[in-house]
Length: 134
Image (cartoon, rainbow, N blue to C red; front, side):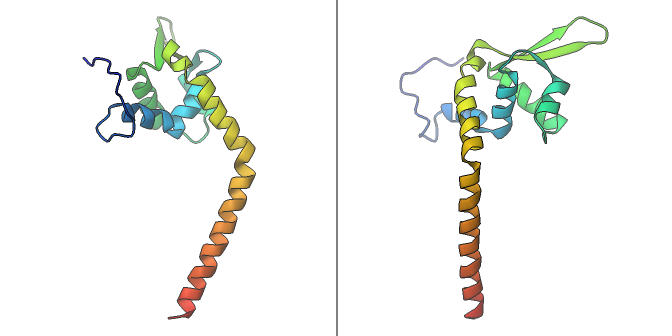
């Protein structure tokens, strides 16, 4: 069992808070938390909403989030069985920061794409010059 310490510092290589930051910074985690922000969602519905995620990656990410106390798995005793995932109170604290990041990404993607194009064009031109100089 871990005790709380006032000197956690994510910048230190040995600080366990780095694992939490890595989990939260994972693109799939962010999309799953945003998906669960409105309430409980079934596995298949998460997979439908988060395009591009495989079932294996979704299952592993949900398991990791459950282990970290961010998501809870609710299994209903029904036929056919039904399982839903929901944010815990701790997970709910991530809603606003991850929504803000999502909004930033959507609002600034055109600038990012322009910058990428400019960078790539410059890099391609520099490579071309180097190759001609051989």
